[in-house]
Length: 504
Image 1 (cartoon, rainbow, N blue to C red):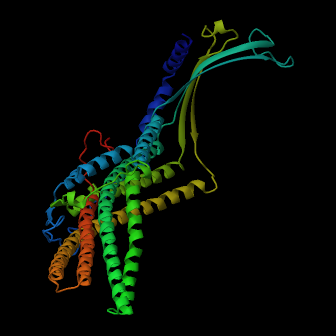
Image 2 (image 1 turned 60 degrees about the vertical axis):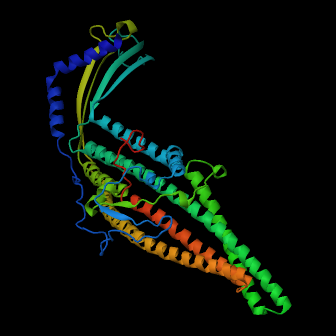
Image 3 (image 1 turned 180 degrees about the vertical axis):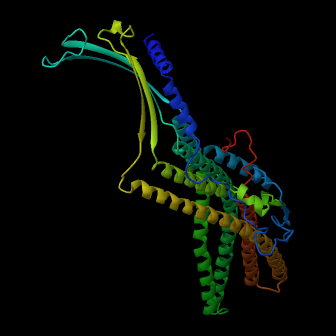
């Protein structure tokens, strides 16, 4: 009841003084401009190709796993779940787990929420601030001074409920530019989340392919070590019998030592890749259970190739840089407006009485209205240099945006080149593997027929295993660079689906 009476007294005060209402309306009408530059979305670069030479319509092919020819479809759309094109159930499950449990992605989600809440908080400055207050105090007045209460009492209690309202009209757009900057920062946080989402999926694909490739390379290298160990044993026996020279034995021992030296780094990389897969999925390294097989991955044959004019809209890092540029532009307006006068309108209404039961009775009410205009005169150069710094940061953000765009086009151009050369490399590796296999088959037949010795067979086996390692590496490159193309083109984040981590 007390609060209602107080609010009523304040409303009556406003009705009694229409000039204050006129002043408020005038302040609202003044709040129609915002100093500083207005940001405009930059136009797409005026380029029509990613590289001086257009990519081939299709890549080379080879009759092995991951050897299919890939076709580039200009302006084709990119699916949001592009990793499913590899047709691997374990890979799909791993990515699903990573999207749910990866802490970096969770942090990016929280950053977006915080940025959005900052925008909503700043928007509160658009509205008047209303505050209710109640004070009660007991005091004694000095006898040498005139008594304050009308009853001339020297000692008395004072009860004062009141409502205060203040409003700062956004005359020069300080608040609007601040909100604009925070909205741009929220947009940047949104695209940071999208970029983290896409990068996570690509990293999981690369880690899975790397694990499968390294595991096969370790197996092949271990077999080479076994073959070379047998060769050393044979040469040592022949040396003891006088059939081989010490030079031949030393050369084979040196080759065996070099192969053995290369095995620990491969094993280290394999274990580190397994640890990486576990961490990407939000697990501890001890929980790693990765077991992928290159032979069970399908290579996408129809690849999208976005138009250069579409790339700046599709790349989340470019959109993030654009949002940062926008935020920097708005901050220039904030810095300029901070140097201009600020208008504050205020009003208060309430009641004060010597007894709590007398509050809100006739004769106890009070009210007040006010207008305050404050302008900075001397700040030691703080505001001037803050404005200059904001303008320099705007130039910096514009340059960073251009750098990001250039890098985006470089990524696509590099990936297109890599896909073309990967196909050629795999074709050559497949041919080399076939030739090594033919040599091995012939060596086995000659050894069985007694036309060749066991060393010739072991050398053929070694050459075939080394060719297999090159083939495995070439196959892995095709998978990882295919994933790199989807990443370079934006990852299809615009296909919003329920539960998408970047859905707004």
